[in-house]
Each structure stands twice: as C-alpha cells, then as structure tokens.
Image (cartoon, rainbow over all chains, first blue to last red; front, side, top):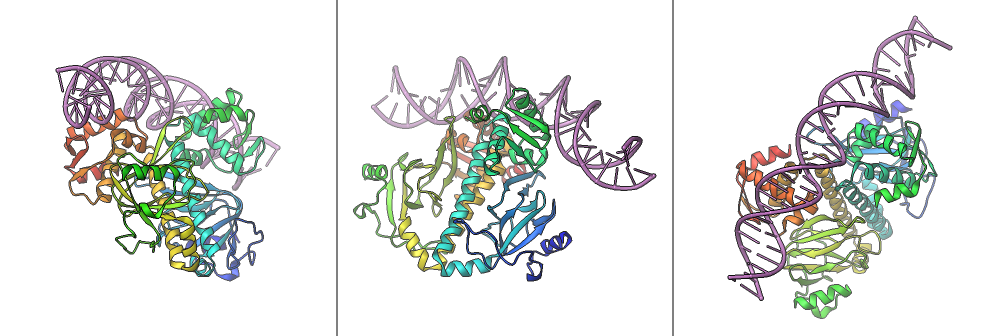
Length: 229
Length: 229
DNA sequence: CGGGCGCTTGAATGGGCTCAATTAACGTGG
DNA sequence: CCACGTTAATTGAGCCCATTCAAGCGCCCG
C-alpha cells in the first residue's frame, strides 16, 4: 500500500483504484463539497508532491501531519508549515508546485483535482468563496510566520512554536511532536543546536519538561505565553 | 481633497460623491471587472485603512506606492509589503483588517466593496478564480518574505530588496525609492542603522551608488544578484 | 539662521552560529 | 537479549554579525 502511494505520488496522478476511501468521511462547516476527492495513504516520510511538479490537485489532511517546504537557492530547506487534520495545502497560483510536501508520520490525505474544483466553483459561488478564504487563511498563516521570524529571539520562537502546535493539535499539557529538531529548526530559521539548547533552557527554567525528546510537557503555559509577549 | 480622503478613510465608507474617477481607467488581463469600484486619492502618509477596522473593501493601487504593516504585540512595526501600481491589497479572510495601509507618497487607489465583489463572483466564475489567484499570489509573496528573512545576512536582504523594487517598479539602473530607511528596516527586519551601513558598504564596493539618499543607482546588477544567491 | 528630522558612522555588547565532541535513541542482525 | 552501527539529540567553546547606545552630519522648511 505504501509503495503504491509513493508511486502514485511520483507520477502525481490519482487513479480511482488506489483510493482507500471512496469519499471524504467527515464534513464540517469548513469543508468544501469534495465528493470527487480521493483519500490516499502515505507512509512516514513519503513525498506527497514535489517542488516543480505540475500542480493539478488541492490537498487536505485527513489524519496525520504533513510538512511543506522549499529548497532555497543556497541549498537550505525552509519549512513553510506543518499541516494537521482538517487543514488544506498545495494551493498554487501557477502551474507548478513551488514547494514539496511530505508526510511526517503515516498520514491520510484527501486529494482533489483542481479542474474538478474549478468546475464546481464556477457553478457554486459558496465553493469559490471558500477557496478564496482558504487562500487568505494561508496568507495570514504565512504573515504570522514573518512576524515570528522578525527580530524574535530563539526563546520566543521556540515557545511560540510549542504553543501554536499545542493549540492546533488540541493538546493539553502533554504535546507529542512528530517532527525532528531539524524540522523545527528549518521552520523557525534556527540551527538544530539552538533549538536543542533552547528547549533545554526552557526545561531548566521549569517552563516545560521533556520526558522523551519528542514529547514536551507544557508545565507553565502562562510563562510560555509571556515569553512571546 | 486630501482632507476628504482622510475623513473618508477614518470612517471607511465610500460615498459616491468623493470618487475622483467614475471607474477604473486601465483594464488588463489581471484585472477584475470592477466597474463598481471608486478611485480615491490619498495624500502622503494618509491612512487608507487601519488595523482592526472593518474590512469591507478590496483595494488596488492605481498610481503611487502603498505600505501595509502591522503593529506587533511588542510594539514593533512589521511592514508586510510595498504595493505598486496594479497590485491589490487589503484582502482579509475575517471581518477586520489585520494590517494598516498607508500611502507612501501621493497615491490613487481603486476601492471595491467586498459585498459587490461577492455578488459578481457568485455569478461569474472567472472573477472568483481571479480573486483566488490574487490571494494565492499574496501568499507566495509572503512566503518569499519568509525565505528572505530566514538566515539571510543584512547584505543579502538589502541587495534582494533593491532588485525586487527595481523589477517591480520597472526601473532601469536608477531606482527612486519613496520609502524611508525605517520603512526598509521594518520590512527587512533589520535596524535602521544596519540598513544604512549596508547601503554604504554596497556603495563602497561599487555595486550601487547613492546620489541622494532615496535614489539608488544599481551599478553592478550581476554582483547584486550573486549576493542573493 | 536655527531647528528638526532623516540619515550616517563609530564602538562595544551579546545572541545565535560554527565547529567539535559526547550522549541518547533506535533498528538490525547475530 | 545483547552488541553493534546509525541516526538523532545534547552540550561545550569560540567567533561573528547585527544590535544597542551614542554622536555627528546633511538637508529641508520654517
């Protein structure tokens, strides 16, 4: 199954036979009417689409986590975002993907053809409005990213990241992160060493504890929030 | 006229009587059918809309330059972008503006009611598609902003900024910038001193010359491009 | 001519990066 | 189950670049 998903991704086509589910299982207010979509499964680390590939689908996380990233001209990897269940990614203005997307762990993804979406949107104004709103929400997320990178210290970035992840994952005190320190560093524009050091410092100060390297317990949420100002 | 524009902005309403032109003068491929829009004039430094105000219009620069910015919780000002003739700004997913917009110099702006746009978009699929594309283009611009802020040195940021401005303003060697050093600093996430020092250094290295503080001559474009990698 | 503002320049500080070594976690195969 | 190899994560020391604090310059406008 995983192999199939990967082959599927490589060619970026969506044959009906490979769909794990015939249609989206959950429909909320935020959902587009995506009956035409197909749900695919991706193994840990599998590529969902690649930078430069033709962008003819829109994607929604059904379960699991996804990272989208770009390789910059100097070779560094900039992670644009982590995407959780219910969130959309892969929107493009042009014909090609400007980013790559990979499953962080095992993930199920709803895939919808753009041609299909356009077809629906042309008939249904609310679908078009939802697409617009999704794009603007992505824009706002990116602008928050800019605000986070601008002048903020390593401590502020890491604290803000933990709070953001906890909120979006709907976690309580205990936060299980599926991404590596390198992933965090590439998202926060820090080095892996600084991320590690900062987490250690936050633990030493009693704001968090780290029972396992990818499990963070938010011991003092208020202090973490103060840290972000 | 300027006073009127400012009062207009303060209340964020668009009475028909204040329109300078009855409709958009230029229509290109990128243009939405915005016959309902009104063109307003803003004096240097005038506020077009403010952070927190109701967002019931979409804006397009007819002439002049606009800066959009947010005041962050720590009091710093993050400039999200500079907007030139033909570019859109003021798109929001929610009911309120998350940013403020001000005319850099004297500027004319096309203002369209969102309700009017929604009305059109519901009937015309191509308008809806254009709105979506505009939003995604804004998203891409913001993601370029993230890439620029991530790890890049002051030199790389300033050089990249100059090239970006030159390209968008369709300038040759000579580039007349309407914004202050503080504006550049707040966009590039540097201090005003670092921006100034960096420009001086680029001049000393022969890559640019600065006949007046807001006029930059790109003496060695290739070297500037190499600088950004 | 003076005042104010925008811009430039200098010196010292500090936070994150680099380079380097160590430790922990995790499969894999014996 | 343990030994091993590999990768991920932590920790340390020194350095560098942007910031901070401070002073001086240039220019526009009154």
